[in-house]
Amino acid sequence: MGLKGFVCPQLKAAVPFHRCFNECKKTCHPLPTLLALANTRPTEKGVYHVTEIINPYKVTCLQRYHDYYRSPESLIYVTFGRAFHSIIEETMPKVEALGLEKEFLFEHTNSFKVKIDTKYGSAFLSGTPDLIIPSAFQIWDYKTGKYFYEVQKLLEGRFEESKHPTQLNIYRAYAFPEAKELYLEMMIKDYSGRVRALGVKPIEIIQIPIIPVDRIEAYVHERIENLLMYEKYPEKVPDCTPEETWNGIRCKDYCDGSEFCVQGQLLGNEHETKKTRKARTKK
Image 1 (cartoon, rainbow, N blue to C red):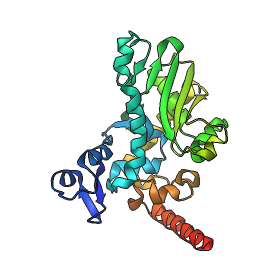
Image 2: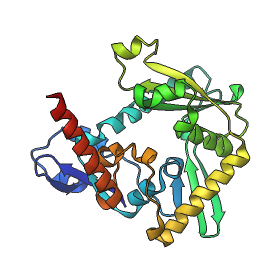
Image 3: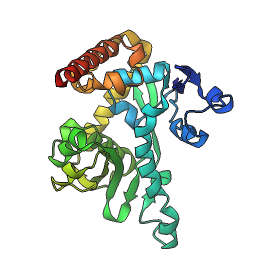
């Protein structure tokens, strides 16, 4: 289950990737662009990635239980984060040439997979910190985000309103428990003169508070246990909270499973109605 193809902007229909790549003679974008947009991580039976367990339960379950299709344009922003990662990862040969490969551990060396046993069975937790600097006892994660939606909260220390601190602390607990400092390096996607006037830089470095390992382990166990329970009893998957739906915005434009979700369709329609009314009022 997972992303299986595009909603073709020309056919206005769901088209599997293999048909799009091999049969379409009039592509909406060059083939390399479409291949890049389709480069998403597949779900694995019995394996939960860190990003899956920190997402709302319903979002993760819908992505794992259904095949879904997205328009190429809706995946553009996802590539921003991957591009940011790739640019930094490409410096690895230069780091090695300087003889510093043991000082800066890149993504491909940092992967972990840990078995988690619960009353509903066992599953593996997997994750990959972007950068570990052993001598400085640091873990770094590269992110892209919008300033007024996300980055501002982190710069103001409102860490409880973001899932990134939990993600970094999971990396610490399972990949590098010796870490004493956790950092986000965040590229601001909507950087502008307005944001610059606030004294904000295009890339901000944000130190993340450390959460005790026992609390993180308890959190991981609870999340995986519940996800395994929902595999057995999908009718028990809870609805997303208003905060998790971003007041309907996520349901309308950013949730891969919204077409399979009654709550998502209702909230998405409500959001679209409000947006339409607001536009008419401006006129």
